[in-house]
Image (cartoon, rainbow, N blue to C red; front, side, top):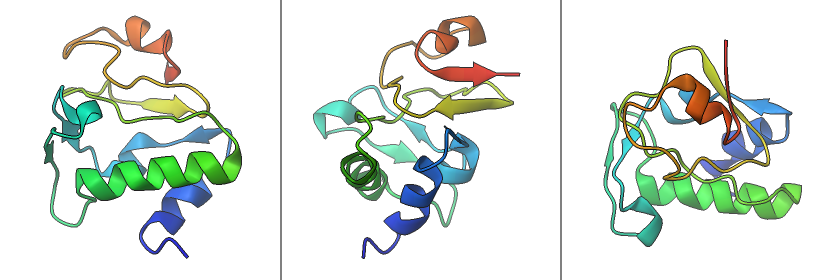
Length: 108
């Protein structure tokens, strides 16, 4: 019953979720967490308000801690996002993949 969130919830149910599939490689500003951020997304992808709502709903349903959105303009290619971790605003744009890994991002 979450409409556009249904696919997000299904994905979060697994051990690893694919950020590119979930958000179509959207980028988020540094102020998203405060609710004042903006997203730069390709056509057809979720606006930030919908995406964050999906995250929160999925966390409640699955019992996982809030996963959050990654504020990065250059998400490392080939990376996935481990459930139960938060990389929300944890690292600046341009951070190496090794730094992202500390916060639940797994890169191949």
